[in-house]
Image (cartoon, rainbow, N blue to C red; front, side, top):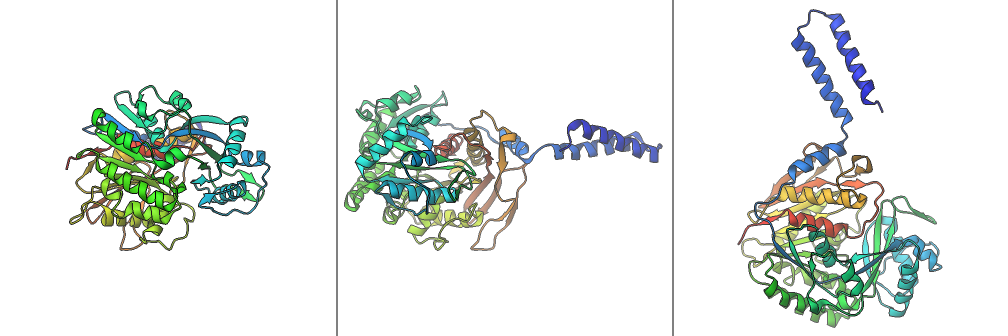
Length: 491
């Protein structure tokens, strides 16, 4: 690639050549030629990644009314993060054929599920049913050189991210043991009732883009999570969480952990979900609630969460591509016949499903629902979709979510254009089900907006980290950042 000095020299030669051809050209024409060439030159030298990062910085502005007190619950744990391939090798396992398992009963199930998702480059989370086997795996993982311990659980990760804002007070409820309490930000308030004697551990098996194991090769970096977590599965801190709200007086509530109930029996799961719905209903009127979803495999549980259970009680939902596809399959929504995503999720397909959720389960005429906002995030792009009239500053919110995806994955304070790349489509249709407009990527205006029957879509690409240092908690950081820049109108 040419450097700037070579380009400047060529500019001088070009200008001189034009002058030789016609030395009587006015100075204004020569200045125009020089400035025009220089403008094109600067455009060539500025990468799309640099242009997008600069444009985001301009677009990301604080909302007129900001949150002051945020309550977050109810899943929390300690994440043990290490290489998935190396852990499985340390357990004496060889590569082979992948197969998904909704619940892991053995190390063989673990290996097959890990291979299945690593081959797709997709994130997933599973419950490990055998306590004795899980504790053996956890001990092996914790003792492995290079294994790292972090704050884990969607609620704790979102609370930890929000707590980096010194102007906010954050309440965190969940099963919090001594190690997790030690890892939490000092700005996070933990009710005494949330403390317990032992920590819950989740194992995070990471893999790099292009990493190989036998015939397996990961298309991009991601992680596979599993645990034998009974405290979070029981959601036994939900009552503590809701009872703490009266004293804390939050102006935003963030709820997660419903997916942890999958490890329970069907009867217990139904009982706890009804109790969860009752608890959510007790959250004071006027306090918006954001629900963060996570990887699930039980269609009955997902369907119950959607239909007349949890969705109508919350104002906002955050989810990724795996959760969105499973949701539409469980509820027989648009594109439910799609077995899996083929590469980057099609924007038109995602748009159709999100639109359907808001129309079927959202706050529309004749429906008793509070749901008015969905934040969809995938590796290559984000969509923030809102029912008109209820949310403000969503251009800044979606841009902030995308920016933090690039900085957190690369562990940088700002976007480093040399360490990220564009994976999003350069052109896409906004729907696959009806007549749609076509959107083309403009790095200088990276947030696109379109409308569909009272619903507004805000889209922006993500600058994907070439060599991510850590992928765990990225979705939680994205949702947290998007919420921090969002403003909800009272209704």
